[in-house]
Length: 111
Image 1 (tube, helix red, strand yellow):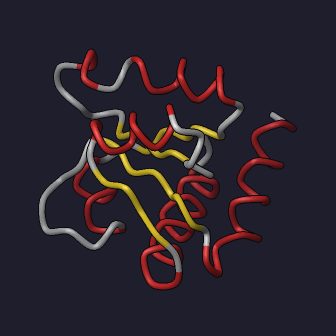
Image 2 (cartoon, helix red, strand yellow; image 1 turned 90 degrees about the vertical axis):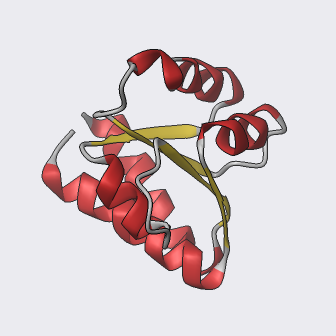
Image 3 (cartoon, rainbow, N blue to C red; image 1 turned 60 degrees about the vertical axis):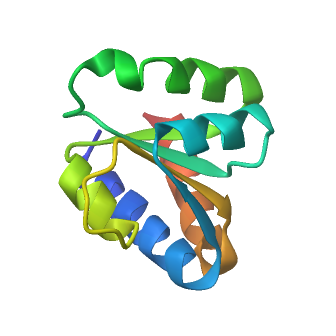
């Protein structure tokens, strides 16, 4: 994934944190995806072991939810407004991040 789209994912999470609603952590994200509530899911690539988040992209694909990978769980946690690193974050209510999420989903389809 390009750095520009990674920045957009972080920006969308920060915007949704302020104006919408997030789910943080693999269990919460999994539940949001299964219920079809998630609009965008971000997963950190540096999760160890990788099995922790391996099921999420498959679930997202099944439900038609955009799933993006970001390089760092530390940055993902910071973008979500928590002090601890987090393996995954889901945007449940976009708030003002709606346009950003559309851009992210659109840019991924072109690649």
